[in-house]
Length: 202
Image (tube, helix red, strand yellow):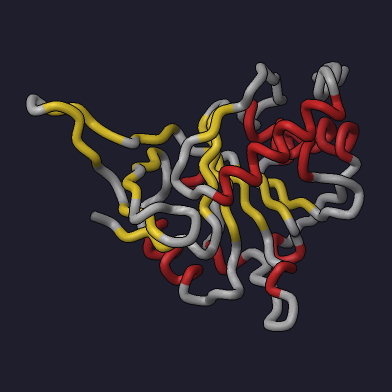
């Protein structure tokens, strides 16, 4: 017997708009941690922010690639989104195991005339590390982020990304205006990483 589906947004229109604004703000201000403004339960293996973002972004016109199919019935029911087997055909991808994800080049990169036809990836990670404490007090650590939406530069570590991820990201950024955009998710937190952002390891 199938388990009952979890509900979607308690206040569909209001919650969808609030999450959509949060995601836009995350992409407009890369490297800044955003937090869901309300509690939300998503089916495993989706994190709360991944599930909320999916309901705010997906509809019957947005093909989606799922790394894990466990959440497929919930997404079909609440968002009506078509699911695809080929990541290159997806406009959105939900990745719950960053260590086993395909390279960024496997996803839709857009076209020279239509760079907006690229994919947006929601990648779940273990957490964010904006700073670390030492005997001398807080000290910044992690890769250095710079680009539009960032005043000067910021440092933000992302826990749970696979080895070589930032080199892969540099290749993605080098294809601008083509390339993918990312939303990194840890629990109820989201960080935007658009293709315009340069990230270099300190």
